[in-house]
Length: 332
Image (tube, rainbow, N blue to C red; front, side, top):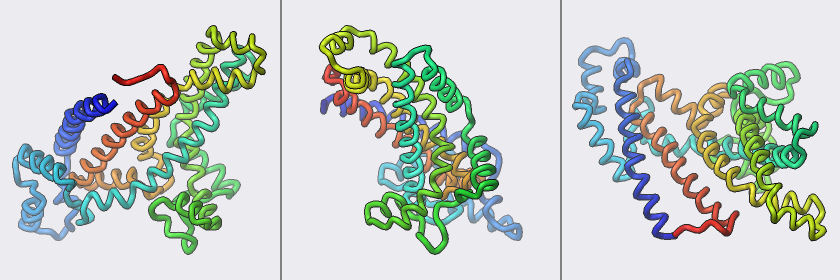
């Protein structure tokens, strides 16, 4: 196991470096000068040249990239051009909101997608299968930004059931860090409910697509497993259908489902950019949008690198879950 983990870690280092190089080259190739965008209109040519010198933009691009790699090696992502604060601190302030939104979306996708997929797979070509297929296709094909806008118009605008934007009500909570999770752990139900009201619609908009995908993969996996010999043996022993389905079939059908969930969890973190913009959610996605608009090179590369590392960590966790779900899987 240790040998396998070390091999995976070593193999991911070139991937992270390559992604950082691609992001670095692409953002520098994009039109627009950070000094022109961030300085006032009254700034003189000398002021712009001084800003470029302070930010290191007057150096050749390979020198800038090598300095960026050296900063990463010392756990320093640089200083934001726009906010004049350390990039790692800015990401640390916004990342909990994105993680909390991703967790809420993941719960919606799993709690709805897996039971719906098992139900549809256990009764192929029935009304339950047809209903699950329709909901699954709806989730996969529905753009998250369009669904978010419709939720705002109908749920918030027409019925006025839930707030349309933000993360917390002014005066109830600060909405920082893990707002809902911390409120639940401390027993502050009023603050927790306030955070839940704000997170429901963004989580639905972000998790519906994943729900449809999880449902489809679960259904296909259950259809394949349910005809295996050990399932027929369990039924021959007299076990009721519910026990056979949820204890024997589902556990063996979870390996491809976990793979999809792991990949989609990383997608939730990076894909929340659009949803955070629609709902004015103060996460790392909206921070990345602001960084791109102002050509804040250190903040852009730092945020993208954070998403890349998140993908790597999630893949490691999924690999470890394989052996727990299916004892036949072992790493040499």
